[in-house]
Length: 376
Image 1: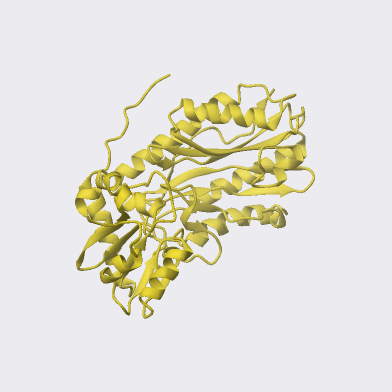
Image 2: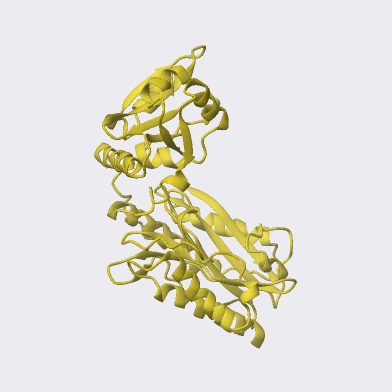
């Protein structure tokens, strides 16, 4: 199996630049600052991921004109000090028995409005509100939805590697036997292949056979795959800290003309969505391009989800390719294009690639054949 060297780790300078950009963006949005709890935003901004998410307050405080400060429990301070971005911030620790909100309060504008990472614990937000009743808060997804959306060259390299690894997994899974095996067995094969090709984490392995394929988020179950089944394969995880996510729909034995027709429509819709990608185009126009193909073919009511979602340190993040999202595409954005048709009680078809925005259009990070593969 060919191997590629791991990308160079992000540096303190990388994290310093991210935190500074987040603080500037917050100020531009009229916020006094940003409060970041443990989770993907904290990893993105500092490289720090606590070994365990506990009830003890950990929060990164960012505001324009002041140095970043990471408030941590004393027992976790040594780990935080070793994070790649630690050199770019100040640590302020608190011990059990002390009030962490009183420790944090002097860092905040007493009457400020702050962006808060979506996964912050309610008890911590309520604790800060009690300490500083003049403050108010808004979710980061609402206030700074593009915080992680535009990828730099180092991030893009990680996404490319993750996409290539998922492609390798697909190239092998179509060689295994499907008929007579349970969905869970094929899902286990997929998970093992993702790990074989360098994923550190497998997030999902959707194997939707026959009527189960009509459920877009079907979890692999005990249904035995039969000859004549359409099978939706949607799988991904993390490699080098960045996500993969791809879908192909295969058929056990030769498909019927009706099955082939549905697959052809979805493939055409996916291509239309891809061709709509270019800088300055509204996100909703990617959705419209793909959806129009499916609607014109008479299957509009069976396309029941958005066309795509952003991807990075998490599998789903802004931007979203959906009607009503008028935000323009920007060079370096990465997102899925994954139209589908889902016929209840019969079968489903979905085709998905991760795409990045380039100077003059888009570039796929998944490059396996989008034609229907015939499996045994």
